[in-house]
Length: 166
Length: 176
Image 1 (tube, each protein chain N blue to C red):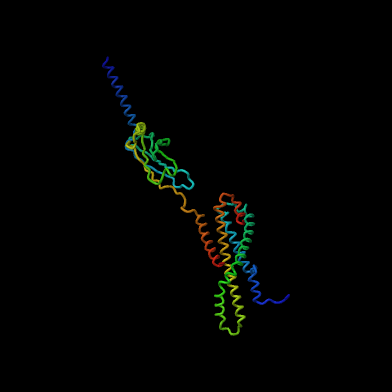
Image 2: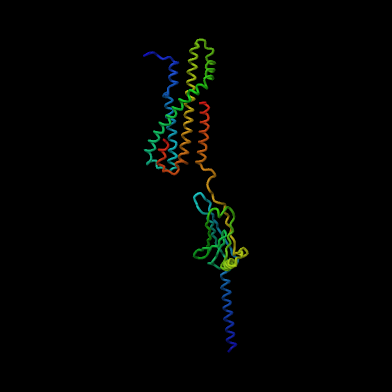
């Protein structure tokens, strides 16, 4: 078994059941997480009147921690949703792939199935990625607004960056 | 001799009466001409009380100045303050916002005689509405601004919750 090359199908299956994401997805996750984590800084600066020079260190540290945690949430949500999306989109993707490859006589049935599987995985990956970003962003901003304006209304602003990472 | 004394007495009394009449006539403003500026509180979100202020200048045809005036404003009788030369007057009232709702507030201004009549009416527990004022000003109070109907953070929170709820519903459907 050592050194045996994996088939395309096996590779896809391994990728399917792995929590690891591609470099592109990882960059997308961390980029979005950084933007979303930086949004409340405007709230702290302009609404809660925190001094940016004095608070720069705290803001930077908490933004980095928040970015990591949000990206972690993206990965987990994507992993959970990917299989469900794949199940829902399987029929439509198969139909589309078979329709596009139906006239190709050179391709065997097995190759067509592999192509459909790959396409299904790609569609499910993309849809799960975007939905994970959307859902976690919405959840993060709801928590930020409710904690800032209602629950922690009477605490000192210095606590605000810390509580975002609770 | 008695006749002479009688004549002198009559002259003195007449002179005294004339002096009194002139003195009284001198304190009463004839045909008052008023130029006024009014102010009322327009903000209630940070201001605790409502203020109604009227500033006016008074010119009397008989040239009387530096009068002691009293004003009835929003049901209260208050003295009217004046500047050094007695040409500019100011009357003000301060109270809670609910005591001064939106509306037109008449300010009846009385001189000393009028104020005495009012005090007499109050002692006799009579209405002072029939007592004629020297003149009447009007303060048009548009009501204070109490802030927006909905707070901005409430709108932001509501919008964020709606968006999150839509996302949660879609996620639940996917996972079902």
